[in-house]
Length: 264
Image 1 (cartoon, rainbow, N blue to C red):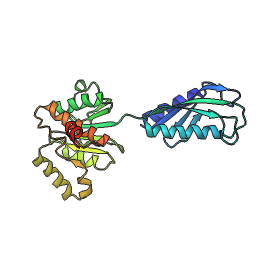
Image 2 (tube, helix red, strand yellow; image 1 turned 45 degrees about the vertical axis):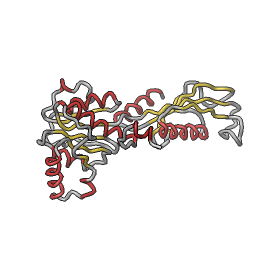
Image 3 (cartoon, rainbow, N blue to C red; image 1 turned 30 degrees about the vertical axis):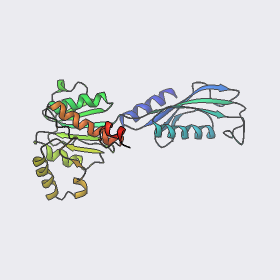
Image 4 (cartoon, rainbow, N blue to C red; image 1 turned 135 degrees about the vertical axis):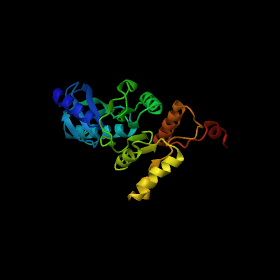
């Protein structure tokens, strides 16, 4: 059973799906589950593998897993197995304590391009807990030691395949902007940004519009990328972009904290 749980965990990790692991940490009295018994729960509350007790206990554990997905934090639940009405409804004559830990995939940042801005973005994103994938024919492996993948054999960016909620930053020095944007806009990525001048950005967007891309789709592109920090250096530009990503991800608005604190 442990091997099955481990295999399922690996498959979920590879497919970047959330899951929770429930472990029985204490038993008082009689119970159909044993200490250290485990169950693997998917993001919909379905138990995929393992055993932590009968149907009612499993239902309570599954609900706890859903609560953990929402909060992002682990929890401990006590399941009463003695009371038919107020407990879990199983006359086992005991109780058990279960630790439920959610495992949430890292937010994913796709970087299409190369150069110091992309390198700095990779470093910033890694520190902030993002998984980073770099895709560009000129990307050098040695320049991205923190990336989980570096794809170089794809000049048309066909392997740029963000999932819902992913982040995409395109900085190809104009060579692949159109191809990368076209690919990104076919996805449900949460954030799509183009590192370019305002004039160049508009040229690319106009081309996409001329080829039938809808206004709603084009409105998803943040171009030029980043917040207005009056950035000059590549590292400063990267900082403005990662700041915008954090702001949108956390629901901020970019206002100075000093103004928020002093506002009546």
